[in-house]
Length: 172
Image 1 (tube, rainbow, N blue to C red):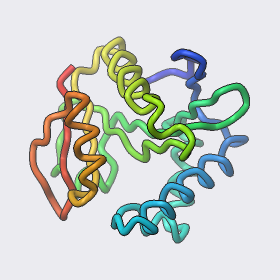
Image 2: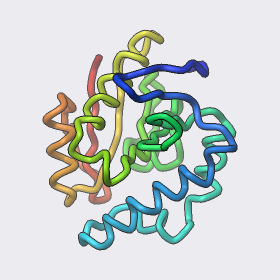
Image 3: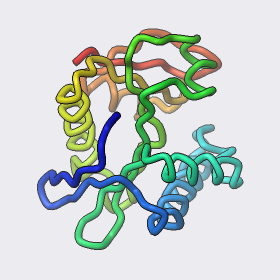
Image 4: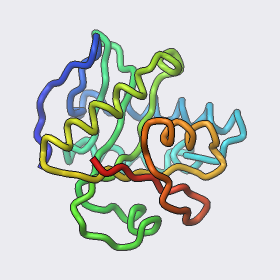
C-alpha cells in the first residue's frame, strides 16, 4: 500500500488528500471538465454533471487521491489505484498483475504549460518504482490528441484502444 508521506517537487508539495480537500478537488476536476466540454473534447462529461462526486469522495477517504499544492493553493490532483477499478476492468479487461492505475490527473489552468504535468508524472514513476511496482497504466479519450501526445512524449506507450479510449502504460 502506498503510504501517506509528504513529498516536494520544486516548490510544490504532494500529499494524500484529506476530507478537508474534498471540495477543492471536486471543484478543480469540474473546472477541467468544463474546459474540456467548452473545447469540444468529450471527456469527463459525467464528472462535470456530478456523476463521480461520491467516487471522488470515496477515493479521498480510501487514501487514493493526492493533491499538489503551491503554498496553500491547490494546483493539481490525481488518483492512484493499486487494484483495478470497475472502469479499469472495462477498459483493460480483468488483470491482476500488480500495475498501478492513474486516474483524474488534473491541473489548474494556470499550471498548464508550466511543466508541472511532466514533473508529476516523473514523481509518480519514481514513487511507485520505490514501492516495487513496475507498471503504471492510464487511459484517456482517443480524440484528445493533445493529451495523447502528452503521454507519448513522456514515454508512455499506447498499447491499444477500447471504447474510444487510448490505453497507455509505462514499464518502469
